[in-house]
Length: 118
Image (cartoon, rainbow, N blue to C red; front, side, top):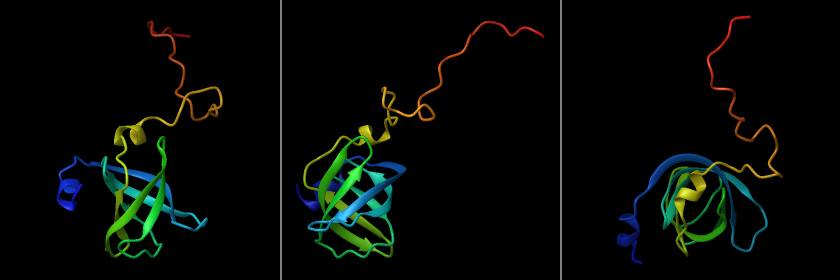
């Protein structure tokens, strides 16, 4: 895809936290994900990157995704993904499986009948 093709993809404005690391480095940096599309994302963080730098981003419910820094402006930068992702997965709830801590799980529905006076 060309740069123009990437800009035509629908973007979801959102606020998520993610980890990013420069290719070849094990050091992880915490960033804010400001918007996300199938082809890329806008990140905000204090880490210093250069345009064209290969990176890996750990997105919630998706996992590690490879990409390249496409642009930089102040403390924000764009990442173009090597392969497309499903941005709806990142919006999905964190989980409700047996290994999910109780405080994260969706509460069990309570009785829906009329309230009674005590």
